[in-house]
Each structure stands twice: as structure tokens, then as C-alpha cells.
Length: 355
Image 1 (cartoon, helix red, strand yellow):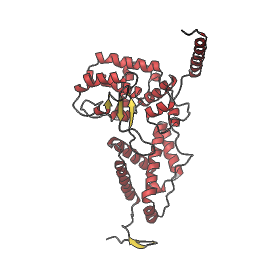
Image 2 (tube, helix red, strand yellow; image 1 turned 60 degrees about the horizontal axis):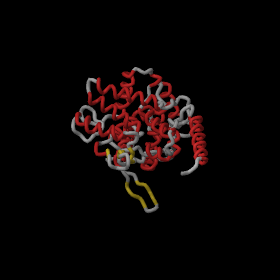
Image 3 (spheres, one colour; image 1 turned 180 degrees about the vertical axis):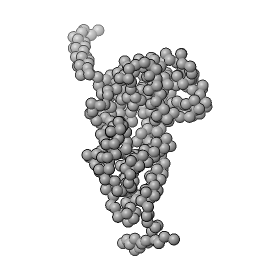
Image 4 (cartoon, helix red, strand yellow; image 1 turned 120 degrees about the vertical axis):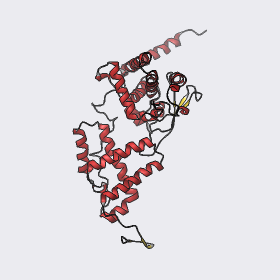
């Protein structure tokens, strides 16, 4: 039996579990505890599965226990990802998942790690190697699709319903991507919607109950209610009445052909496949997340209050919403024309005789 050690505190000494001798084995146990904490905080199974894989890939790329990782190790991994052509958002995910794990070690395991390995935990992620957010001003960040481009894509999806080999998946695609755009949902939020989450009688437009809204700073799901704007309620009524019953029976709203939930990666790949069928050049392609940014931008351009857009998207702060808004090149001129026309109309109205 391994000999227990004693740790002396102000209140005396007490026995501890044998200290770890294999750092990688100990780290594996820490990862298991970290993942268990996600479940305790209410993370969805899909999120846990995806983030566990991401954490394992990050730790494998670093090649040493998390408490031994240096800023130079972070630089190396992020740099290798950049050289491999990985997107800035992917590089940021690697850094963020490591920061979350390291924070967990600081809170839960710092005493054990210092006693077993003689290392005091200091996070190696700093202002110089932290990846920039997707919303930062960057020439690589493409503007969201224009209202005309989005409308043209939806027209294509609608026309395709009548000619597709399988009616139900084509109709589901139309309803699902309309939902992503008009409700400003993330792919995973749409994938996790169930049929009971559609409430047609709630509010003047009806609302979607997004039960698995993304939280901030690893806080767990953040539910929100999203109104079904721009006729989305009519689209979803049609989908539930005429289309959903053609899929296997389950609670999932946008089900796959087995009745299960679509993965967010499947949604992304499906969109790419449909744009390829549409025949537009790749310069006019966009991602599911670009539809969410388009929702923010187009609502802002037509005068919707910024706080209302923040609530629609489920952002914690208005500053996050502002990073999503990319007005058109003529936004200032268009706003000026509307303001001048409104002022002239008021002046003209003041000069007209009253009845």
C-alpha cells in the first residue's frame, strides 16, 4: 500500500490520499473531473462531447501537463494551427478551452499539484498570445450576406422543395435556415430545439424557447425567449403541420431522417452543400454563423433598437452585439436620407392647415 502523507494545517495534521507519481495519468483524472463539472452545471451532452474532444486535442498538441505549459508552448500550438490554415475562431477555441481547464486546476487542484509536482499554477495565456475574437476589426472578417443575397437563397430553397428527390429534408432545410436567420440562432441552439419549444400564442408574434442558449465564461446554458419575426411563425406552422410528421416521431424540431437531432457540424455542411447546388460562386457563400450576423445587421439597419437585438441574440452585453453589426457601405447615406425626409415631412405637416 502506498504511504499516506500528512499535511500540517493550523488545526493540526490529517491524512491525505497518496500523491500522484505519473503526471499524465493525474492529468487524465483531472480532465475527467473537469468534464464531470460541466454535467453538474447543466451543459448539454452535445456540448460536453464536442468540448471534451477539443480539450483532448489541445492537451495532446501541447505535449506536456497543463501545469508545465509555458507561454511559448501556447505560441507554438496557435502558430502551428495558423500555418495549417485553421480559422481564427478555431485557434481561439483551443486557447479558451485550455484557459478553462487551467482555471479549474487552479480552483480545485492547485494544492495537490504543488505538493505532488512542486509547481505553483500560473496561467500561460496572456495578452500577447490570446486569440482575437471573431468580432474584432479584421480585414479577414467578411461582411454578412446582404438582404438580397439572403432572400435569393431562401427563394432557391423554396423552389427546391417542389423538385427535390426527398420532400421532407428539403422542406426542413428551408424552415431551419429561415429560423437561423430570422431568430438569430446559433446552429447548436437550433439543433437542440424541440417541438414543445415553439409557442405560437406567446406574445404578438409567437416565441421560441431557446433552452440551451450559449452562456458566457463557461456559465452553462442560458435560456431565452426569441420572437418569431418576419413571418417565421407562418413558416414554422407550415413545417409542423405539413412536414414534421414525415420524419420519425420524436421531440426534436428539426430532426434528421432517423428522428434524432442534427449536429451543428451537419448543419454547416448542409448549408455548404445547398449553396453548391444553388450554383453561386464561392465568394457569395456564407456560414450559419453569418446568418446570425446578418440577422443583427439587417435588423439594426432597419431601425431595430440595439438592446432589442442584444436580447434577440442572447448576448450578455451590447458591446458583443455591436461586434456582430456590419452595416452596408451606404448605411450613413441611407440614414441621412431617412432623417432628412423625416424632418421635411414634419416641417411640411406643420405648415398644413388642420381640419
